[in-house]
Image (cartoon, rainbow, N blue to C red; front, side, top):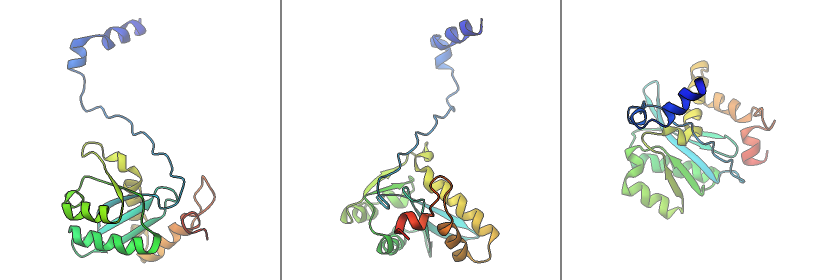
Length: 174
């Protein structure tokens, strides 16, 4: 009987019209890139009144964070240039749909650095899920630590359970 009800509801056009529109699709897991720093997620966040930009490497899960004086496009670009100077320029950059990333200045920056940027949908932020998770990780670490930099170092040098290597080892080979 349950199977008959499921078939009836599934095939009912009236039911389809009035179906709950808030149901969300499960995110499709992102395929891990073959090389470190080839795909990087980026997002902005606030912690204790300060503004930050975060980058996370999809290959190694290495997290980099820079404090921003303002959340302007030029400040974000400056912070990203500093991080790219340390780790290299990624091929792909996953971003949320923040207005700073949609401005011509940012798009020109990506073009001049030959970065393919992928904007997540405003209604489906989980397409930048590694960056969202990295922000939660950083906030959790910082709440427990007196030294933000040391807590990031601890994270970066702690082996990941699935590969038994740390993010630093995966990114830098040491």
